[in-house]
Length: 61
Image (tube, rainbow, N blue to C red; front, side, top):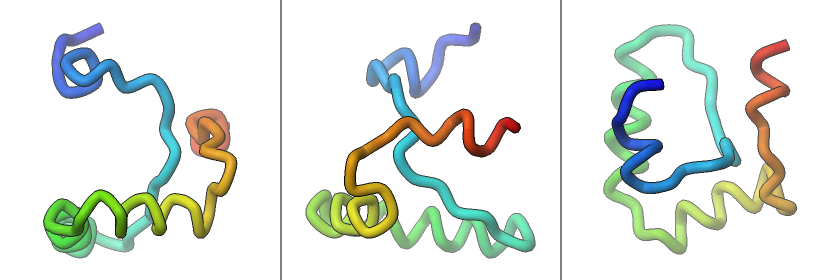
């Protein structure tokens, strides 16, 4: 729809997400995760989604 991050990096699947009570908590968490190494991020995904399934449908229903 709109050119941006997903188009630029050819993102096709949502493999990890978190819910937060308020926007400040979500922004803090995102800021922290962005500074992690790729290895730590992969471990985080594997802990909840070991098959790397697309989770988009699970949050839109």
